[in-house]
Length: 31
Image 1: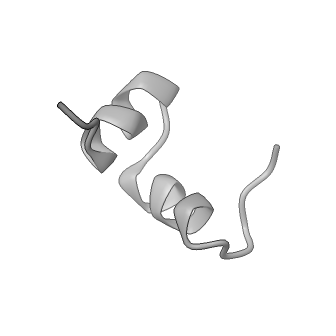
Image 2: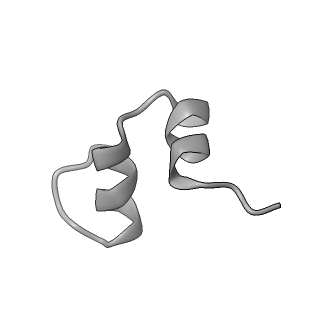
């Protein structure tokens, strides 16, 4: 089963918005 955006956010300890920004190449995410 593929991980969902919710799964990624939960595992990384970040918000859904942060995952969305990273996946879509948007600015505003620190490394």
